[in-house]
Image 1 (cartoon, rainbow, N blue to C red):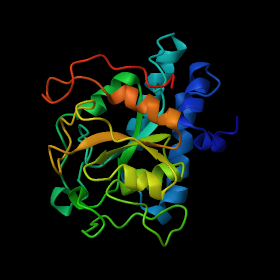
Image 2 (cartoon, rainbow, N blue to C red):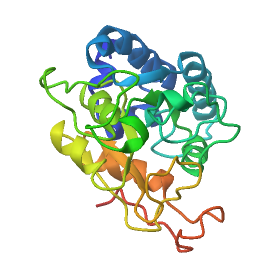
Image 3 (spheres, rainbow, N blue to C red):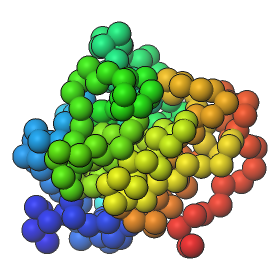
Image 4 (tube, rainbow, N blue to C red):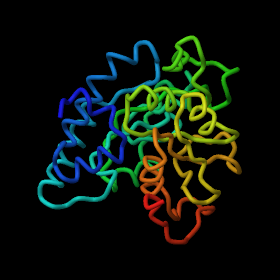
Length: 253
């Protein structure tokens, strides 16, 4: 398959091709890393692109799959994460100039889970400052809606909506306090899930409202949301509000 066409696959279709080794995680990651600089200058969806790390993770995933150690549908899938979620050794700004130099010393639990699932991190996505909505500041510039650059992609997970809609990642994570997953999904023609309370850990997420914050996927299809949510859900002893119950496989809907 022409590498330039890989970003236009759904995450679940890409996962099927990766599993059968028709597409490699390295090819998929390179395809996104080549597309991001071509498109994102108009959208401003990324704050940080982690190209070297992404290729390292993709090579690791490729070797694991070649040797028969396939981890599941997120293995080798290029994903991007709202810059409200801590990533070890990678700038995490919360969309604020106050945190322009903040580099966390540990990953958020959802990032650990994505790492365990074999996902490939492309970078960190733009957002309104501290997830407070579009009326507040955007120190890293306002993201734009891929469907109409004069329009808003929704907030506060604006970068997640814009990047996913523009095929700059296979799927993404947002965070929702009062609509910040659902709004960008709606504005950008996507599917977003605000998980039920306690389904996904909030440990390592810069909080807007601890009693309301929820991390969840923004994706192009329902099945893409399902495989992303399956990867990040589950009990976390570092978040006492998470449910200590088995996580169902959301993909066989």
